[in-house]
Length: 182
Image 1 (cartoon, rainbow, N blue to C red):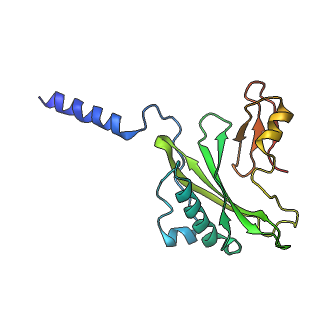
Image 2: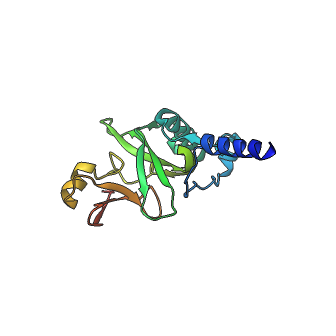
Image 3: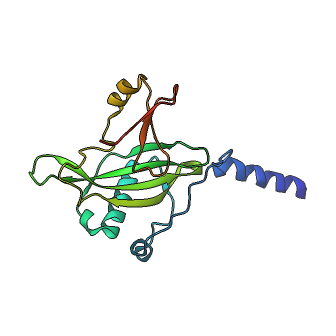
């Protein structure tokens, strides 16, 4: 009877954990002091909930880089890991009005690493607000259509090697790549 109870509990855990076959857990956040003192940034978030990631990302950016306070979170961008054993990432671009008042530019970036079970963990904040006046209008700076044309594929992949803030576009068939920045 005890054997059946243990077996049932083990099977229940496997079915409900959502981590079956997961080999790339996201790294636990290494939080800056500002985020540790606020609390809540060391937990995982639903990687599929774009609105929640955008809100958390904007809050983290405002706490870590005061120049990003008041920026607007833009659509999240998924970035695949280029190496085995690395987690995929979600990058939240933060937009700010251009000095001329016409349009938005990317003033900052917030990353989340996606691990087993589709859970996202805070990664880092990059403050671009003091960048040169010709700051990127979008993230990534090179869009998928341009990458597809330049790489000769209809399915370019946005990937990163060392930082999701500096991704590249890759042709999954040939392996050729181009920088995704401007």
